[in-house]
Length: 233
Image (cartoon, rainbow, N blue to C red; front, top):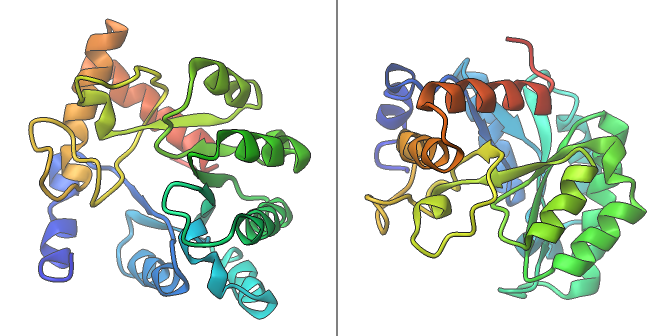
């Protein structure tokens, strides 16, 4: 987005995007999210290190993240979790920092944004051991079974369903609307860069599957987001 970030963000609200929560991945990304939140009134920040980058974490950096959690426009700890697909970091290291960041979220009284890829059992086991039900949050880009979905819903979690929903081979578990910008662009723009401007395609897909209007989808998902991130209207 370096070539047109300001132009793109400047077009969001005129296209009906009421708010954006930009989550962290690396330390650099966390600080960039904070800068965006400071600059744009409709952007909020996530603080967290993605499992692909946790090898760079240490206690000092964790304390820095904990301090950023106190900022008024930090609304979630994420994107945190486990990724055994890319396997960029050892599983024990991923688990350690997933647990540490869950504890950080609990201390900060913030919900979490969980990344889990090819790590269903370990993610769920840690979620239960660390009392995820007391923290709350969303399982980002949910791609597991209906049974696994029920486990998380029983904890009071939300399921993040984005552009994948529009693919022909999509599993249709739908509760929350999200993008995985710049990835997972919905049909008909699949293969191109993704952004929140593509959310209407996800809204239409959910409306069709649920048998409700797009306006109802927008209202419900907005209400879910306000509740999830504990944000005032």
